[in-house]
Image 1 (tube, rainbow, N blue to C red):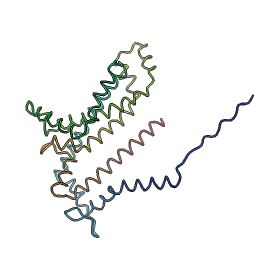
Image 2: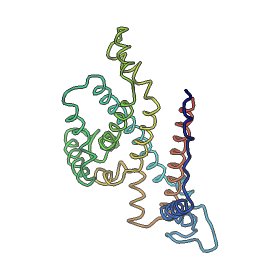
Image 3: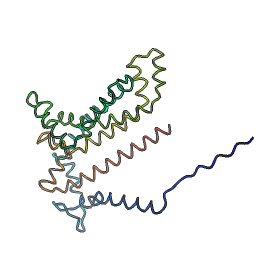
Image 4: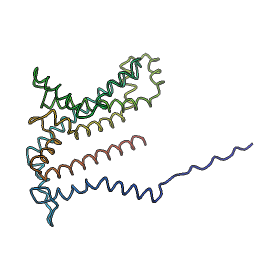
Length: 276
């Protein structure tokens, strides 16, 4: 008795209409970003399209002006600290749920995800009152401090990081944990020597996501900072609100290119890790 041959696997490709609609949608979404590029090359001191002459003076301002340079360093320090702290907290929380499986896990997850559900304005007001209250007892972590901004950005990043960590842990076979327990591994050894190595690439992607989110955060930062902890998005907002500095357009182009490079690097890294 001969078995029937399996039907060939068909590969579905989008038709010309779908491709055209996708290209038009992408062009519509990218048009505002593309329009910023010529504005950043204007030789004028105000936002305008270049009239026959191109200039890199506003890109040079990003390097030579101490305000832009300091704001970039502040944003970099805050993004590095908050993303690392958010990933660490989310990883510990996810490992605890995955290994211990407590009965109140849904309640704990719902509590952690509250900052994601609350509107950003409400979160900003709550963090403002929290940090101003903390400023009355000490000045290191409070209103208008880098540590205070790190704390606020960590609170905002943890919910999304927890969701992604739980998704990564859901793909792990629990039999490897049972095997580690049968060999006498402790809880810490099972967590850090068995489970974590299997989600290390996912944790790297989560860290990149938290870094980009912290680097680009503006709404909450405007509530909890004033003149000392000036991040790059806040300085850009001040430039648009006060004097419409064309350096804002140059900074937007640089940030767009850096974000694109990070995302493309992440995609290539995931493909290489999947191939290995």
